[in-house]
Length: 250
Ligand SMILES: Nc1ncnc2c1ncn2[C@@H]1O[C@H](COP(=O)(O)OP(=O)(O)OP(=O)(O)O)[C@@H](O)[C@H]1O
Ligand SMILES: [Mg+2]
Image (tube, rainbow, N blue to C red; front, side, top):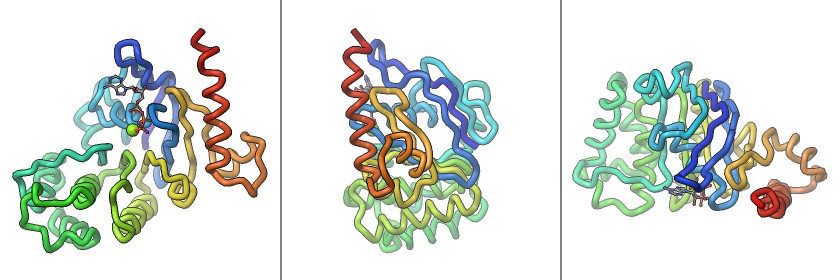
């Protein structure tokens, strides 16, 4: 469903990500973890086509992002790290705008109403986006990623600023999406969320993949017993990488 091969992105001389390859199958949820600056947002923005990769190949729902850009992008829902909705549209107009932009107006009304209800935003339906609180804007951004029913969903730290009820709603949406054979790639710093939701986890550090696999596989690779948490594994693997980093670049 989503294939990333040898993805490399440099911002002038700064490495965002280097030679990263992974896949997210239909019905699978993969967590992208890593310390600040590890490259998570870079990977997601490259897949979403917002920044252009320096090298590598991205295939979304069978469409090559570089040669079939429109159909590749139509297959995506993307929750950016910092939502930037149009302030002067109402919530409903915003959802409708997104559905139209993706050419998916079939069933839009039902989906839109259900999403607003799930995020406790029904009462704000006809209010301007600029009147929303920060968490409400984040909820709207998530609703926009689902309103056109895309087969591949990317989320960049979607739970930040969202209340517990909203977080529960997001988790339910994601679980439903994978049950419907859609693919989810989610970046998060909340390790408990990754542990709870993700089938597989990718840990990045300094733009490269440190490890990848199921939680069980990560335990083995980190040489840590089952009693250790994902936090122990994360800290151990990313600390190690930090120590080899300077020697690497010397
Ligand atoms: N627009 C940009 N211009 C220059 N360098 C950038 C730009 N965006 C990101 N970088 C650099 O690329 C690297 C990866 O950044 P990225 O935003 O992908 O990290 P991240 O894993 O999402 O971090 P965080 O957890 O803080 O969100 C960092 O070294 C960062 O400084
Ligand atoms: Mg980021």
